[in-house]
Length: 326
Image (cartoon, helix red, strand yellow):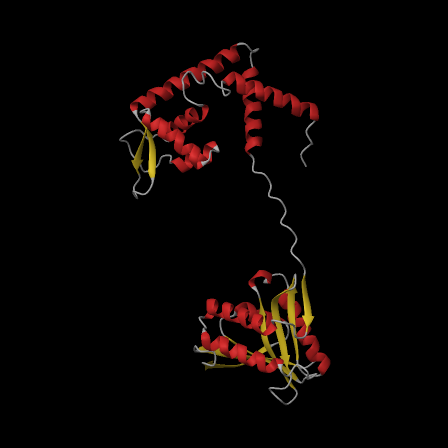
């Protein structure tokens, strides 16, 4: 873990940085031997570094957007600065290969301007180093390099706020039928191409089942996050007959997938099945939902039947899984 900075060092570095800024001319007046602003001088140097000159090759180069990112300037500030440089005859815009991007290039006047900037800057540095004891140039270089890299280091992102815990609750609650239908309709439209027929089947079947929730053989669970329904599962202990349980409407919202909410819903349903003493639990799904199949098989379900079917409005390879009673 990095050492905490000493307060005295922090203030001394701040004072030295302010002095450096003033001596380099950033506060106004003659900067780099000319009448350009510090941002314009840096822009010309960045354009020169790209190697693109007026009439030259435009496969690479620097754009206005690049300058904004490199110089930490807003788009409007870059636009104003470039308009002045173009009007002054130092910079021109050239079309890139796709014609939609403008590459910035130095004119001959701009190249002379940058050469003069480099000459002034080199003389300034050389004069300062000449006043130091021999060997101190390496100390200055290493200190400036380390400090600049530390200033430009990315700031660690703030930790994401903790999401509310997912709660598994049993029984009907207001909006349950609509929300379960919505989750099914959206998920299977995106992942299987199902449409109106599928949504109508889900809504109708769920509404009919909900009218039978007073039976002790039927139950439904919802996963709640901050009061919102984000998952569901149901056990229908009547529609198959013969002491068989039918696992239905098992789904989790994308917002909680990977959080274990699905496993908790399935565990609640299978705990109910075992407590009721059902001989077996059946569920119908279709081929291609590999994550769901893995979860079912991890909880003791076995694939016992496959057949083409169109009950959901589109032909799929329907699959029946069975878990024997415990």
